Figure 1 (cartoon, rainbow, N blue to C red):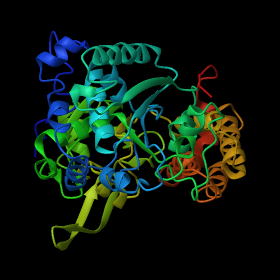
Figure 2: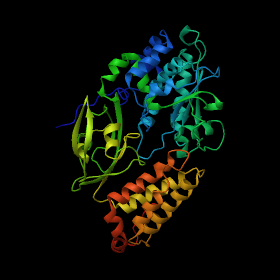
Figure 3: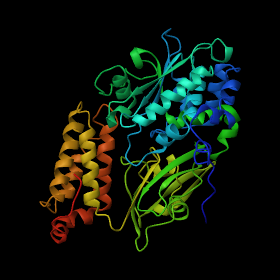
Figure 4: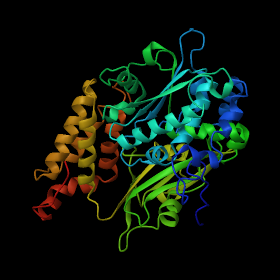
Length: 452
């Protein structure tokens, strides 16, 4: 069966000839009309629309957006803040960057609508430090929006005021974790906070109630407030509503970003029909479906079990190509949808060397606060680096897995899981390759470069 057609909501205009990121172009294409409509409604109505939509956060965890908003402490009397998590640091993920570069006013409009719904008077866009051009574009867009009275005091004459500030990130992957981000925004080292008590909805920025949503999520909110929560919930599949943007990179003929109704396209349709299949003369070997921290999937494996379809439990028997690209289906087979970063590896890839590069990244990015993560990520890097630099042993795969197994569930934030899952899955699914690497290494060119 061929792939369904793309349904572009967030990327509706992004590739249109002549479409620019200035406000006049945005206004010509219906920009800020949803904001005008939304500020005429009651805030609680907008929150209810988001709840009815079933929107799940697009930053990686897939937590329901309406539920997150419902947890905010509205009784303390403290100001409520909204933070846009634009610290897109997950390797293999590049959707938010395109939104900010090509259509920044869509993000600003979604942010102001979300602020109005939650009585937020001050919002921050925390953008990745390595995106200076994106920060410049956002600053310009906010100034344009302020000049048109869409941001700032007395927005559209309603008496509601809200400012948006752009904050450059600290150049660290850990700043994408919401409490680490909050620490960084307060001017401190980005060490994630212990939860409880520091749930952002209660004790977030400046110890005040705080909402943290990522870029794509807030753009979806704009669309929800336009068409209504019930209409939005009809897009995609139950429990996985709306559209999802997939960032496909690696060994396919047409890498790029693609937007489909969630759960309506399978991995095989995405990689073969949409992305053109493997490079000539090659075959698919492995895929990471949700950014580098998601567990790797091996082509040729099968996954069996039961899944809920409507009110019924039905059997499934899937190869990697058969898996629907939604949060729940990918979780059922032991991986995750994550941030939508689909990283494809073909039969030319040495999985030991691929893992060595991933381990080097996570070791470098650990904040070092928790011993299992600080020491575990370092030792995984040391072992895999030693392997690819000429001193591999048959037992190293088992050693790597034993180190990785000591990290999950023993750290303050989810970075412990993020750094351990690649090693756990690579060494299990490609055990033979790790066991044989000490002999394979002897046959590889002496000047072979491995980036660790």
